[in-house]
Figure 1 (cartoon, helix red, strand yellow):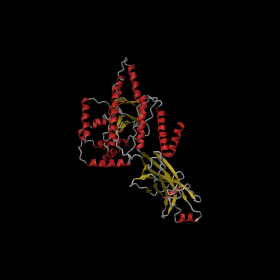
Figure 2: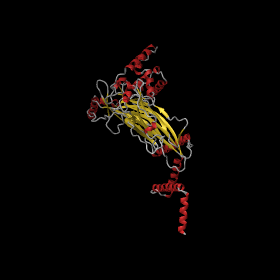
Figure 3: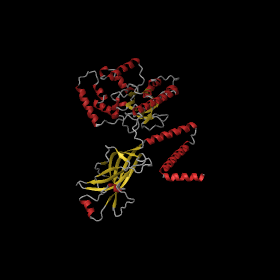
Figure 4: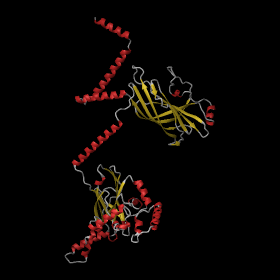
Length: 563
């Protein structure tokens, strides 16, 4: 008996760039019950009493006993090794109904003729076998260690098997064909077809073991699932259980009165690649990736649509995620885009949208309405004067949250605004809202009973109205109440020729410094040059905006002082 067992029977996932057909696994099973121990004890007695002429005990040490207590075989991927049951079944050509069965019939006859059977206890079920997908009904749902204890099939599988049995009973079959054995061995067509639809993405191989007594090999109740190997065809290999890798063997408990215990060990014995072959394969993959990259570049092309010179294109793909903290249920949001001066949009662009009506749900003691409403805005900015620096104003999204109840009563729940982010990328922003209120109880009762409430005539009053031309905006005496908040997800893209020109100029400078060897001072020198260019540009703009008369007077004074 073994002192320790490997109890980790979970699956292991491997990644390999090699083709799966090169996978080789060495599997070994060995009986470790008292029967084997007694046999070994008898063998020791035989060896010790050979000189005494004890003939009766010598018969116990026959070489066939060792093959009955242990078995070892090297299995390749999807390599078919026949069990004793299959060897007996496929000898009869009459039971072969499919091309695969007829192929197995030829292989079995060749094995019998050549007497070259590799293993008596270890066999395989490949992905092409009809009964591979039927294993989960019996042996793929172990709750203990590896064991042959089988769980019963589901009610649906039993009913489908009954239908299959009725169909086969109606057929006129040859009396020499063992009907009962075929029915018990073959799964239903409906189950096989359904299983293959579910598992067609993975290729499966099962390594099985026949753990029956020496005189009872080939019986289905003695079959035990040892190893399951799956692959998706993209380099992922799933092995259950994992390779031993020098650890303790796995423990297998056979079904039956004796409850015999077997020892399972298996290792990966695939041939490793030579360094020359590995380098050749890596170079081949690199060449393949380069060609694939060139192919994708050819599909995309280099002629991107660029905005005109001096124009900034701003593209926003946004989403109204949720709204929370509002008084009433059944919320919807009306929002629109306001474009400041020097901004424009496409003629087909809609600047106003309304979301669907959404009911709230309780989430962490807060009523939240999840909209997940997508929207897209595209705007163009163009400078009108060459002296203007930067972008004076960004577009603004104004929105208001409303509610609609069962009696068609509308209520304004809150106002808010969202400023376009100045930097591209992803932004998650939460905007808090408020709504105007009127003093007294009349407005509150009106809002509660018949709906309606104080509203803004101009929604841009939430921020600074576009029509306001003064210096200070006074809101003295205007009463509001804080309501809820709205969460936005924004993905912003900015496109301009200036970005491309600046990137090209920066790359050129970097290449110059790399050729000169100035790697350590490259960043500092680039920053100095950029700062010098900005200062020079500002001096030129200041000189152009300075009055001409002052410049002429200054030059005359300078000439007189020098004279």
